[in-house]
Length: 345
Image 1 (cartoon, rainbow, N blue to C red):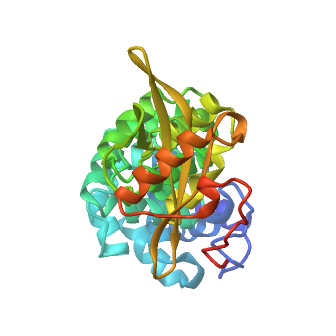
Image 2 (cartoon, rainbow, N blue to C red):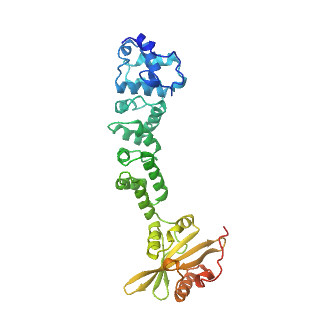
Image 3 (tube, helix red, strand yellow):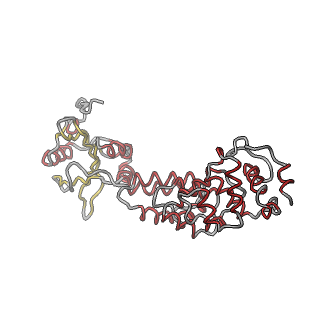
């Protein structure tokens, strides 16, 4: 098919908003295909039946040349090289920086012509050796894959992760879940988090997030270690979110609502257990709170369902906490004492 026929179907140059406008056989790329056909007779003969890989190759080259500001002569110069010079050389001439290895992945790009920003994202990803390796090992690469890889943190742009994301449901949700877990699980390496992705049930990122929250560590307690309590009891710092949740369930109270205060470093929760026979049974919980300039103060001790503990237990707890260096507010020993707002918030 002659290039005159191709040209006759096109709007005059320059294209109006070439990076976004649609129209013609190849969408935004159509005017550029016509310009190439005008200077390359061999290309013109197949201009309306181009194979997908060649379309993506041309679109990639044009996109790397910033199509919105291109002049026809620049596109024509590119067109004279197509089918004559190797693709690597054509891309290098179109955009000298950052095109190494790009030609090798063109045959894996799927779907219709992408928008220029997507090709430029692909080029940016290929500039990273690890990411480029992952892309070269993918059987096919879609626009969705490029968007996903762009959103992923460094180190997660690997072929196994992309394949997992393809099977795990709504990609933006999964990417958000990964970013959230990376912030929550500062005790894990990225490799460990990637490994845990295999356990994410398809379509259920919330369950995966919840498991990581349950295992997330809190900051170190103000007084490290288990504190012995007279009468066979002990105070154990709850050092993970999951431990706090379990304590709240065992005591049927609101322990889990203290999680953010613990994470901020404003409070810490101790589980109070009492020795019965050969086991320790949940007896209650103690909250210690940071008092500005004064250090840490034990402010309350509560039993099952937030009920006050027996007087003997409260006195024993107060003694154990004082021996660990804590201030002890009157309300911990005397539940009817006025509440002291020691944090002044």
